[in-house]
Length: 273
Image 1 (cartoon, one colour):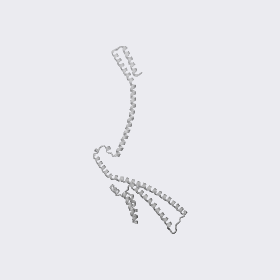
Image 2 (cartoon, one colour):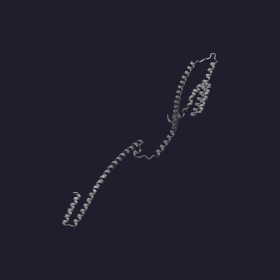
Image 3 (cartoon, one colour):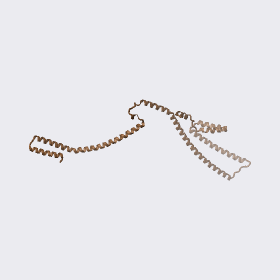
């Protein structure tokens, strides 16, 4: 069954109405008693005209309850009067003893207790029916909303197809890189792989930075240690140059001796002996 057929079936479904449940009973009783049927049909038409308004139905129910209470009181009063008149006008008056009254009183109490129990059961049944009716009304309302959404679904699908077609026209030319033409799932997997590789490279870079920082400290320490040695070397070279200059200008034996002693001193200084 396609979507259109399902929607047509939902549109053609019978509308829910609680009052229609009473129509078979009214029809059956009207076939046996025309007068009673006319009264019931009038009540049915009145209920049908009132619609499904809960406030109107509640008011009608309270009205019928009041009428039933008055009718019951009138019936009891009428029956009591008839029995009293029959008792006092009969040829042989019926005399009731106190024992019979007590027995009837006990039966009356039992019947009242049974009636109260039946009323409690009926009240519980009415509460269950009311809860079920509310649940059915809620579900029916949800079905109506879902039906409306389903009716709008074909139009939305057509709009989506139109947007997809326009995006297909506007999309960029086909790339030679196969990674640029992957589906969404493969693209997400590739992206996760690239992120893991990037995280690994970042960790390696951080470790190399820490190592280079240690090496820089070692180099700085060595440079600090080489500073005095460089100064001593420059001083020794300057002394050698000065002695060489003096040796070239003075060729006496005494100067040569001084030059040799100075050279020895410079060499010892350089070699730190």
